[in-house]
Amino acid sequence: MESDIKFNDCCYQIDTRLWGLPQNGAAYVVQSQKTALVDAGTAHNVRDVQKAFNNLKIEIAKIDYMIITHEHYDHGAGAAQLLEKMPKAKIFASEPTCKVLKQPQEIHEKTQKYYGEAKALVSPYPPVKEVSAIKEGNKLDLGNGVILEVIDLKGHTPGSIGLLEHKTKTLFAGDAVCVYNEQTDFYLPPSYPDLFDYQTYQSSLKKMLAMDFDYLCLGHFGTLKRPKAKQVIKKASEVAQGWKEIISKTYRETKSEDRVLEALRAKYGKTMQKAVVDQMIKGYLVSLKLA
Ligand SMILES: [Zn+2]
Image (cartoon, rainbow, N blue to C red; front, side, top):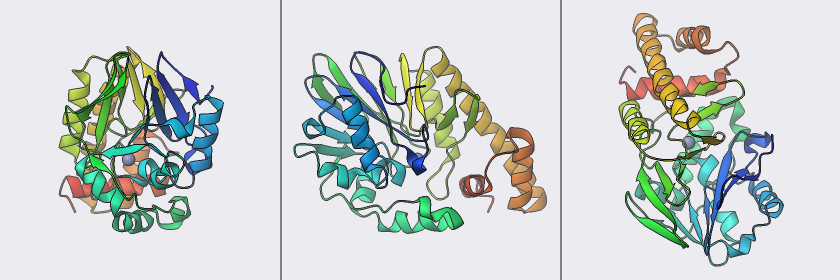
């Protein structure tokens, strides 16, 4: 399957090659009279993003807008370096994400801590000098009826937004749905320590289910069409709830994160990596006030 593609009249999918792996992280481009980049990837992926621009014949110097969907390094840490190659680009994000983009040190240190032995995967997070705040309902007009509207999709993080492109009915969801693998029909909830809020996450899924769109673009990874897009959002809600039930019950009974990991693996996949799932368990425990 091709990773760097144009999937409708004005939208492109870019494989950022997160952690050096194909189809692990995505950014997107919307092009009309003006051009916007949605998410930047990590500081390790800057060259991969540039390569994708070349493949897709998009001139990086002509990018007008960069929008970062949320605080995490795999979406925002590449922004500062990419902006150097985009002399006219203005960058936008929600208020909480703006704060992180300008002062990423704290989140960077925490991310390294949570990754533990895998911390080499976490790229540096160079700060962005200037970034403007956007919020629900704000619109970026790219010309010829191509309009990006900001949708509040908190829950994965407090600063999470999506962008709805009106002409092609494309929803760029950042990590508001989260990890889904179409080949294996495998889904992972977007829990992460400190920033995840389970109830708000479920509310954002509900909000997306009520929206009208034909394409759903995921941060991890790829573009889903109707009716698959809505089926995946429903699945996300169910699996996230299943995780909540297993985590609550097992942790109350055992107070052991390892036992919680075993229980989750038994239900949702024996091959789920400990380093990844441990962080997600912590995110749930904090959000559900169990620990
Ligand atoms: Zn994220």
